[in-house]
Image 1 (tube, rainbow, N blue to C red):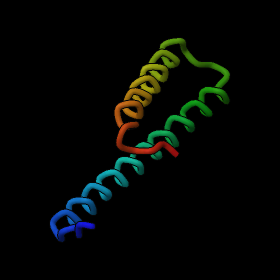
Image 2: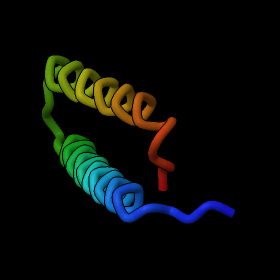
Image 3: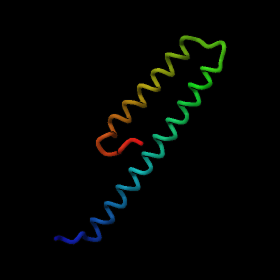
Length: 75
């Protein structure tokens, strides 16, 4: 078996830190979207344009998740 070098280990640690940061950002985006959706559900008056904007944000978010899916497991 080959030994992992210190440089390889440092590289793996750095990559793991980047991935962890990405997961934190994705989770924060999920929470923000959930709060916005909840606010819309509780609102008695909202505009169709508001819904379109939320839909676009959700689609952008889902695209981000799909692009990251190869490297980050979704929770």
